[in-house]
Amino acid sequence: MEEKWKRMLFYICALLFVMVVYIGMIEQKTKERLLTASREAADMSEALQAQGEEKDTGPGGTEDTEEIRTASAGASGETEAQGEAETQKEAGMQGETETQQEAEAQGETETQQETETQKEAETQKETEVQAVTEVSQAKQKKETGKEGGLTIEDCGENPSIRVLICSDNYSYDYHSAVSIGCTSDFILEYSGKKEEHSTSEVLELTPESEYLADGIMTMTPLKEEGKIILPNLARAVQCPAYCGKMEVRVQDGALLVINELPLETYLKGVVPSEMPASYPLEALKAQAVCARTYALKSMSGGRAAEYHADVDDSVSYQVYNNNRPDQRSTEAVEGTRGMVLKKGDGTLVDALYYSTSCGRAMQDDLSEEAVFCAFMDTGGAKAYEASETWYRWQAFFSIEELTRLAGLWQEGFGQVYEMSVAERLKNGSALRLAVSGEGGSFEVEGEYSIRKFLSPLYTPVIAQDGYEADGMSLLPSAFFYFVPEYEEGTLTGYTLKGGGYGHGIGLSQNGAKGMADAGLDYTEILSEYYGDTLQY
Image (cartoon, rainbow, N blue to C red; front, side, top):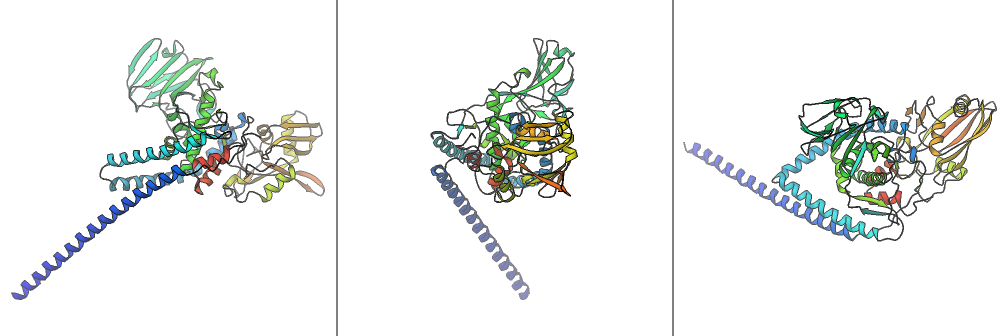
């Protein structure tokens, strides 16, 4: 019996010991977490103070030109081939984007668990964002004070922008018919009437519809979170949804569809459609500033006035709502709210952008043929995007294929004897192409025209990683040189050795990605591409 009590007493003591140890561990862990939180708060305070005191290192500078407006990618309006490349790029990044989104979702869940309530977490985040914004704006005000060169300013504007919604796959400006609905109840205005309709209604519109008897109809969601849907419109996402209101007009016997919404909301549909959301946040911020600048400049240009719009949603302006808004791209837009690029005289920069550069630095003069060829062969190895697929590429054009292409340009030209670059821009892009042959000689002038003339529709273009692109309607870029190929002393064709993807003016999106990966912030990225030297 005595042995039994001894064992019981031993168990009670052991249990008490375990409880004491456990309570001690909890107290120690609590102290460590409080200490960590305190240190993080101190570090954040010091970082914000250091950022506010940081001196401006000066803009990097790049060339800026009015040329190639019709040949742009993204904001620069790259045409069909750029659209193909962007599709390939987005497809390649899809898995990465989904992984990133899952990681972010997991991180958000952990953060929510560590805070006492979701409300406190949101309040803390808003406070931090406000502090960072104030520091950023203070730094930008100092930049604004510089004489000449580039400035990054808060334009303080959020006007409504009118976006022409093109037909399936951006084929046409007009629609023959439109299916339109709303995720909430909505107001329909037409023929002097104003009616409330249910979310279950999907309107099937043609130019002869009763709602368009006066030639115009407007749909506006009743709820702020309501979105207008075009269920049959072919885009990268199914059943694209649009914020703001939608206007449908009858013009030239067909329908125009125009989305009107606040500029900052519009940008949340542009950034993920122009740059993969998996790219670093600072690269996305640089893209957001470019997109905002380009949109504001377009709104004052009147190029789409005949369609009662400011821009359209295709690569002719900026791709909009082809991909759904993403948390990270939305953060980039909100984190740069109102920020635009301006020249020293206060006018907006022509904020062009494109996919990939050939590695040329702003100070390099590559207008001479020998200098350009040497650079393409040996230079640019340390460029931020040197590992990107389209950083270097090549394609072989036989004399037979060049003769076919010359015949499309000048009917009956006959066999091509020789082809060369007659003139280059300072950045190395081919400006004039000289063609001689059986029918005499002619020149192709302009970056876009040269890329269109040398269309590799039936010639595979081989990227530096071995990827072969078939059926391209445009040459990847005009940064190339000719290497003549001979067999037994007879010219059989030319190998084009080139680099980059896009027109090469303004921001390189993959360059921005590389710079952000290297630790540069969006102001430093923009200064590199849009700095003091804004003209050739």
